Image (cartoon, rainbow, N blue to C red; front, side):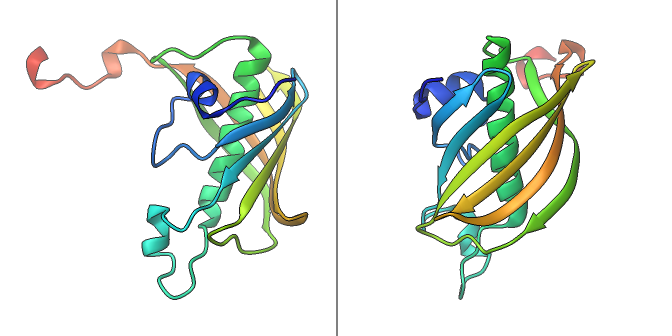
Amino acid sequence: MTTLDINQIKEFLPHRYPMLLVDRVLDWESGKQITAIKNVTANEEFFNGHFPNKPVMPGVLMIEAMAQAAALLSFLTMGQKPDDKTLVYFLGIDNARFKRPVEPGDQLLLKVDIVKVARGIWKYKASASVDGQLAVEADLMCTLRTIDDAAKPKGDDQQ
């Protein structure tokens, strides 16, 4: 139930710039919920093309931010930090609804509740809001997987 800064978040999530979409954890309760923020800045790369005359954060990235908060909650709940062989994969996104655009300068408040965990499948109810206005909500389903060394591509030095 403590806050986490960006350096602590990076210990639990494998994502890095430009795909790390959680800037701070405000609160979390093991096995229950997490509240985090994504600061949406004008220098985000996606704003160059989405859209040049009216920048709007892509909906898929809002969903991704909620999913990253969910993954963070899962690792915190399990009391483990992922290694370089652990990933969280989406299994499903249901009931996604977009309620308002998110623009540069907005702060996206991410809220994720664990609904159920069974046989390695995590189900969450997630939402993101700006200034108290709901921006997006969705039901998410994820699983944690270990990457098999045999599936990794070999580099030039390993041929």
